[in-house]
Length: 464
Image 1 (tube, helix red, strand yellow):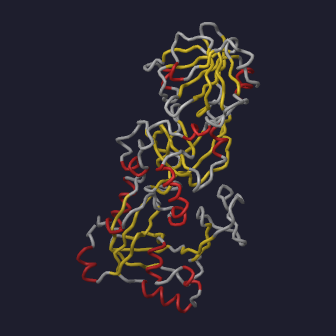
Image 2 (cartoon, one colour; image 1 turned 135 degrees about the vertical axis):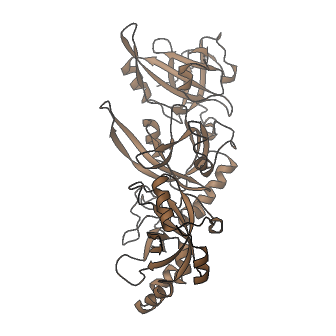
């Protein structure tokens, strides 16, 4: 699409901040920061159909506006393929109208700073690429549409999920993983493409986010785990019945600004790259100090709480005996090699099996770490808790060595380590998280495991 500035000299270039309903024959230039898939709308009175394309553009740090183009299906579909998020466009001869803040249409578009909306028609308006002085617009695509400090931490939203239900929230997160594009058949028989990603911040290890908008599905393919930061504006935290966990919901009003130019985003990116993926445990949804876990529960009480509140994460202090601690057997490996970027297992040549990881995708050299992968069974007088996964800190404490040092030990030394712990009384602090596959079999992770005397054990263990 060639620029129309020279050929349409009667147009007047107007900034978004200077718009008003009385101006006509105008030209607005800005960068597209959000774009939705074309839709077909039925007009019942005329028994006809028209197509529309909606997008959001900005021409300054503070000024952005919603644009709607109406036209035939072929026209709208062709127009949609000619510009994308991040494209600088010219909107020529639109109709400027006041937003109806209480109207249905305003709820179905992103929240903007302009008091107006731009409506374009195939026969009278034009949307085309802008070809000159584009560089000054590009940074605007990386400035949040909300106040840079106006966001919730993932943990705050998670812990206050009932109170924040159905509220629009902002988040500053870093991409943890990017899933493959999937084609899903909808109830109406239509197939749609979607992509699942996982995000995190300093307070929460992993929160799923499902994207259905095609433009954003494609754009997310360029996001790098532990590299790309996102400012999520007007998202909702909703319970995902399929996954049995809370997830972020991308809706009509949502806008994603990737790699936002803010001090907080830079700090988050630095933290994520240096420490996050190498130190997080998938079973622990948020960082927690074991010393703060002081709610004493029996094994039975833990299991009953799982049945009653299977969708919630909780912690408990269990006084129990370790009756299964297989350090020297062949039932499962106790030490594994993982990708340092994403914690996935690696191939024999140390390449990551996760194609969405920088290492697995080939954009970074392979980097692996040797880690413990140990599970234990514990029991008290009320029953047992099986397959409690040990954090790296707990595994090192019980084995009294690092994973690399453990590999060098003989079978006899491993057996001696096992019986130093087996059938002894311990105070085990655990975190119990939902299991997306089976709510009745939650993920149990040992945050700490300390020896206790028999007298202490008998005094503190609950009766039921």
